Image 1: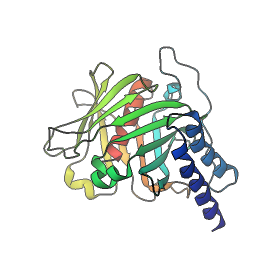
Image 2: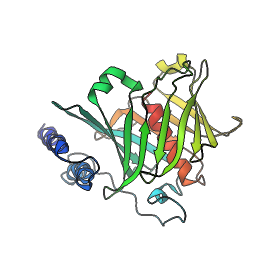
Image 3: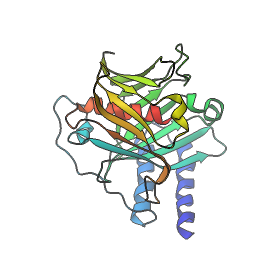
Image 4: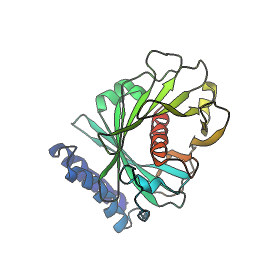
Length: 268
């Protein structure tokens, strides 16, 4: 009980400090990281180790080299914080490898009014941070409808790495029964496709979205939303857990785009 009190005090200090900080400042980024590190240090939650540094990849965005040499990511929601009296909400996630080592720390910031008004159709900005709080990837979703039969306003996500430099897009495209997405590079050329389960199966706990070749003949990976119980660590809310599998030799930019697609699918 005492541990939960300390956690809530830390979260309170975090959300009270945010309105005084510019969301783009280094202080704001480091504050979120510090809260997690303090929790780990005092054993308030089981410690999650950062993955060791990897060699830099030529002609690749900085810090994306951590995605090289891996073929699976596990994304778990860490905690939600809400600023009462202010129109801001935040969701934070751990991005880990299959060994349970933290690769990145992700935070979604959005407007509380839009969250309640628009639900899953809301716009949001997801920022991916490295181990010292530096911005690695930024994902921006516009206000769009989530209905796959409404072809005029389907989902779209823009991915930048580093922030300000677009590396690609994730587009939902029309299908009467299946949620389908295209992953495009910075030149808006199709590189991969994603196909989800039939809409009637959305009532199931586990949902699998296949990662496909452009001709949709070959399954090269998947994005899976897992039911409660997939993650047993008490530090992570298993209600918001999904895993990503892709070829180990896939370009790191495409792996980052698939990560972006997983957040877009997760919010649907």
